[in-house]
Image (cartoon, rainbow, N blue to C red; front, side):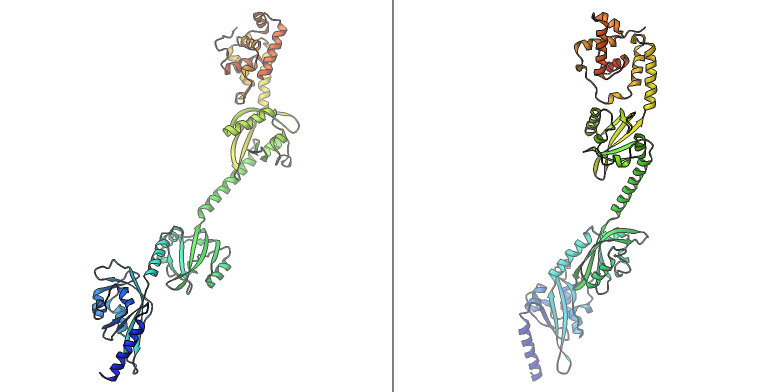
Length: 497
């Protein structure tokens, strides 16, 4: 053995001794691709115990181990790290998945490989070295990130900070924008501008260039087919494959914007309808009955101004005649949520009484429950009806002259929809008053009732007046209808003449 060969072997043994305990895997290769040595870490990374199990040379190694890039493409024979280093090529950070031939589905081993070519004093390659790090855990974490990133419904893209080009895009972003994957990957943030019309765009660009966190802000993304979409965008710096990157994530606000636009348009239509409707309308809160709005028809009809009404309670304004009935109105609204067609009296600012048909319903205004009241002025109609009834009653003082049908029609003309509010009970009457009411329903006049009950005429007239007062009626016809509505004295016939 020559001195040169001995020196070389000595150097190799010293090199092997130095590197045998390293955590990185090391394989020594001859120029002819003969594998001459590997440390324990390199054997472990290949799942073998002896150097011979790696194969005698590069060809045997390729027969035993299948190498693929991370994009799932298999390496050609001349692309294997052992072939490249034997060709004198120095490289770094070659990432490959390593599996046994025949068991290519097992890609649990991932190596990050680099090469070294050690030359002798004459500059000729003397030792070829493959240095590999176990990147399996890193690759597993990256794979989990890939799956999470792609499966995440929240739209997201990732760009490299070195050239600001997109390297990843998930399905959520493609669905939100309508872009294709090919239209995003490889393009810059200026071509697919994710900070389009951002409310703090200067700050976002400053943070992007500095590789710092970009706070949440509203922006409008341009769609490939035209138009824009309102989003919230934020940026988070991260490291991918040892490259500084920026993860942009988005929240789609377009649905909310459409809902807000529809709500605003609905509110505008309601406001216009409310203001322009010629029928008096008033709105008050459900809890305190505080007036929050009234249309022009309401104000002009009752003679109040906006300043006089808004903020005051219904009780303070005292425009609903008969306070007790007003309390009943709100009790009914609280229980049923609405009132339809109630005959009611409203007091104007001047003190004049206006007859109305009142309807009310529950509405929500700015998340607060309110009552909306609609008043239909029937004062003239009421006056005409009462005048008609009074004219007939003046001519025909005795109810016995009327058929039952006519009596009911007359009473109904005076009590339009009055049955919607609670009235007096039959039990409020005394026994004698019930007798009198029963004889009225038979169609008897006061003299006939006095004769039937063997009482003085004035006494009967007093009983009749008391019955009218308790039942809140004003004529025999109304008293008869009141009783018939409650199915009282149903077996008693009414005289007809």
